[in-house]
Image (cartoon, rainbow over all chains, first blue to last red; front, top):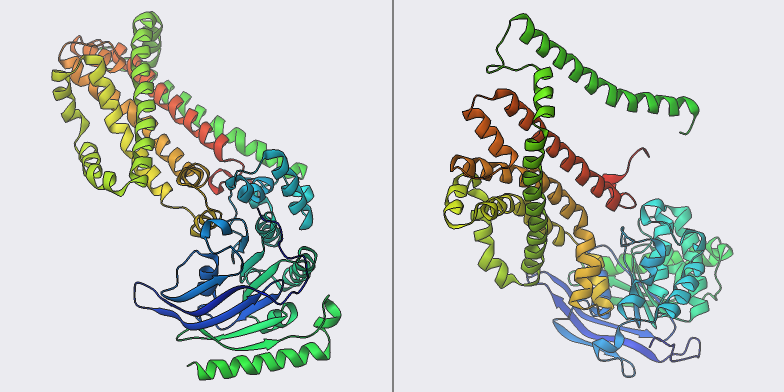
Length: 267
Length: 270
């Protein structure tokens, strides 16, 4: 059901594309207009922009949680039907969004339970997912017993337990302290490379987007749209050396300038 | 933290919470008994606690049977209220049309004083049934209102997540909405436990004046007519103990169900 269909790493074929997407809410607020974005198989792309530029709305539209008022979401292959995408998309919210009444194991198992996966197979996959985020000793713990960073790891494990083709992340680390955020940045990059999944990462941090992404889509607001894209060509794996390099500083400055221009132009 | 000094302070604090109310009770009873004896107050005006206790022991067969009647009505009324309140709330949650159609009548049932409905019910229903219906009417609304609130308090992101994974309505209800609502439901049940006793007593008193029934509240009315004041006190004591037992039993259920995850049941970690 959620087998990775393309074994080639960094293939350049399009996985999903937003074409001329607009979203106007029933109260008249225009969140997005004329948004174009292509997400390629296996890449790490960030949506960078100020708050209120519709980043989260764009992510929800890709996930199918919200319908565009205009434009289209085009999927590669046969995934155009919504039902076929269940389990092929993982979503991580800004909050860990765990079920407080269930322990780590049961929280991570949720997507498999909703897909009615056989119990034995599900248990093995849940254990693997929990191990992947380094929480195997906490499988029986309840969310309230965990730190903020650990809860976010559980959230990531849950999103990855179906081995989704596409992982959508909505400012997942914004509420964490810097030390925890850096650690999770590195862990996420490692998992991305190991699993060869495609990640769309929403952030308002220039530094985070440069560190993580292969490509940054810079957004402006009123109405929300992608104004320009930047390629970050630094090779992976990226680590602390990259974070402290002059190249990283340059890239951050460039990205920051681009963002400033986008915001000035976008009102 | 877990230092011995802190542990001892904890134990002393807990002991005080038991010892102090018991001491107040003993003192109150002693003063009561003394007042009755010193001023030679006749038992048909105010019986002393010793006499009340002797009456309780002497009338234990009669009062025990009445207790059983009232307790049965209360528990049945409570269980029906729990099932009815949760069931109706789930139904309202699943269908807006049903909610719009029926909710106003649930409110009417709640705001009309049960003591005023009881005589009418006694006209149409067998006495035990009427008492049960009264207990149910009083107790079901808090369960309904709290469960409705709980079902509507689901984390929106979690609801989105369930939608993303193609969860069925039943999945959402069973694995998301009901667990989210559990603390609210238990809160409603704790109110309902006390209220079902109130409903049963109110109906028994209404029925008692019509000359039927054998519950504790009926015994109180009957004893009042016969100026058997010590027995009134004895029956009242039993009713009050019943209420206390119900309250703590439901508090225990609440604690056992929520202790692993809900803020309300956490203690001693600050």
